[in-house]
Amino acid sequence: IGIFQEYDVGDATDDQWLRVRLCR
Image (cartoon, rainbow, N blue to C red; front, side, top):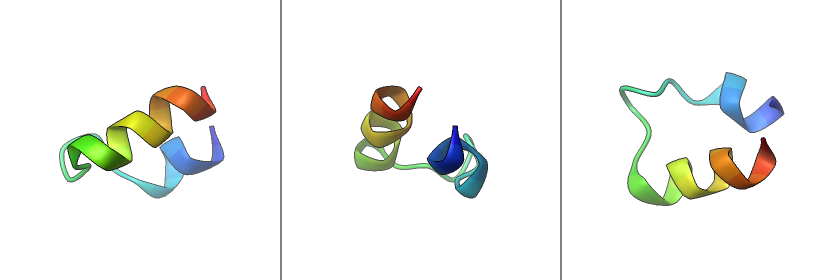
């Protein structure tokens, strides 16, 4: 969830989204 809070879903790129999903 830490990374999820750092990135906004609207601004997140595909790479960032992968990290967010892995973190959750």
